[in-house]
Length: 588
Picture 1 (cartoon, rainbow, N blue to C red):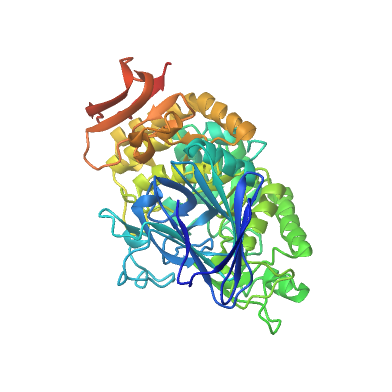
Picture 2 (picture 1 turned 120 degrees about the vertical axis):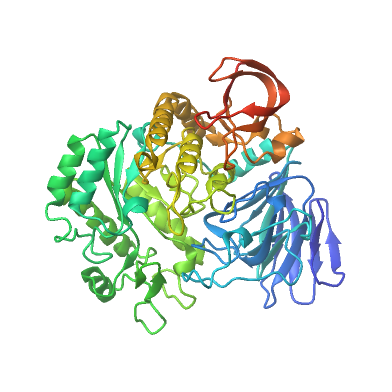
């Protein structure tokens, strides 16, 4: 690995056995070895310091991307503030981790606010503005760019006014990952176990915001009529009178307690969609503004933050009284209605305005960390969408809203690469968003629904909204079969989950977990392991009825036929008709 200070003249160096000091014209740099790592620090500077690190081997970590390429060498990510983001102009996701590690065992951790570029594209590539307007956003396939011809600069670029980086040099990719876990920690308790066993159902993709009591109960009855396994029923957008008030709209939901009691009788627990925004016309906004519990401008007025449903006040998560108020109202809502938990949306750093004033001064990413810490501690039955150094939280982290499409550019393939990337960022409890996607710009079809359900059957949790029975009887039957396979394999899922809370190993693992030296395993982005024993090779290409499968070292038994294979081996044109998910169990 080569580390260089970009654009700087030769420094004056002072070298000792375990340290190096360098004086530049505008800052000083020190390199010190301590407790198994090299620490690189720079003094505060008015001019950003840029450190460039060459990328030998294959690289992982970083967290979520919109165009979720794997490994990171396939990415051309333009230099930008490393902030958790909703719909980022460069492709950064809602759950980021400032750590990158390689197949050769190198681990880099940034402990200071930074801008990051990975294998940056040549000059002239477009830059897309951040906006909720579809017309202004670049396509998902360019956020970030794919690098099939090695046009990128082949480096990780880290920039900041005051840097604190830690460099570890370990044996291989597995030891580097273990060192990362030791640094950031891991959860030591499980979320409610039923979330691993039976699917969640939610109103969002099917109904968007056109929901009421009749719609909710009718959907629940349909799920039972089609004999699907179920656990949690999520009531999504527009259950509230005003965003932030945490009160059911009496016109849409005249008897919320009775509705939830009925859902309980049908075998569901119930969650409600919640976010940290408050509409200006809401009672919560008025109360929070008077108490000083909202994020403010320097003049003291509450910030009206743009989000996907307009503009609203933003909860100040640095204020302990504001958090007590927010969590206390959620507990009161549970007491009034009998609801069991919450789907916590947003929380990304991008929603904190540049001139924001908070009770305690924070870096924008700290908003994400504090928000997730608070809701994870206060609500056992919860899911969250954002994450920043929240690896210890015992909750499910949902992938960013998926498109109803096939590719790595936020479609079906990105569910697989996203699961691998999130696991390697230290988040084992993954909720892979909605089967079939969110149906924003395009609708699903039977083939996409079936292949999506097959892939999700081996994920830590499943979540339906688009009803499979609306895509024909064959789709209904196959999707039901794989929803039941998830229940059947929940023993394996929970075994891997318990390993995660003991050692920090991911539930969904890349193939290199079994052989960190095999180039095929290090670069495979269309297969995955559930624990160490089960390998899935889902079909993620439309129209495919067969696929190439790589089996790592070991004895493998095909799940459906009992056929035996000795790895490492490549199976060419392995049959994968529409009703079959290629699945193998490691026997030795």
